[in-house]
Amino acid sequence: MRGILFEVIWSDQDVIEYRVQCSNGLFSGDVTLYSGHDDLRNAAVILAGFPVGPKDSRTLELGTFEARAAGGGMKAEFSCVDSAGHVIASVRLRADGRSGMGEAQSVCLEIPVEAGAIDSFVSQAHSAASTAGAKAYLHMADHTTDWVRRWFKSI
Image (cartoon, rainbow, N blue to C red; front, side):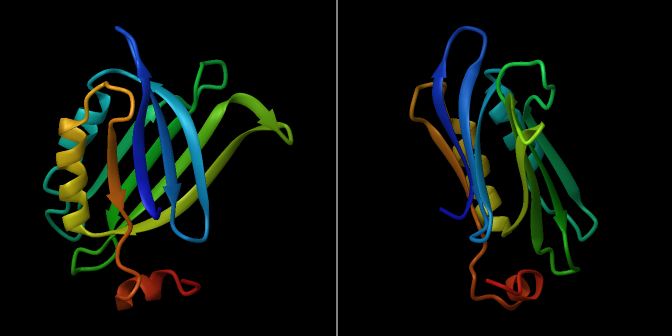
């Protein structure tokens, strides 16, 4: 799995528990977070139609980065890296308040994505229910393109 995967673990009347997995082939991480029932659909609304131009950028944030709160957090900043509209998602995951080496565990990575994959993710996120097992997946861009190699020389 290379990209960003949201999976519903369980839900109640107040929140949905998601497992968020991210990987770019070099780095990966996953976190469990709690979010409101409309938050994934709101993320889809934020990303809909992205990118509209080379300076377009969007930010998604689900869960929490507050150490005292239950669950973890996920923040993804989507931005164009060139005038052709190629996109990098800079993703940060933070585990809940448990600490390793004196700090909460976290991972930061960049994932190249394409507009078509964003459109597919938006569609999946709009239809993802609060039913356990529901998923929305944002695929990483094809590894064979030159722009991916330019940004990720080790892939």
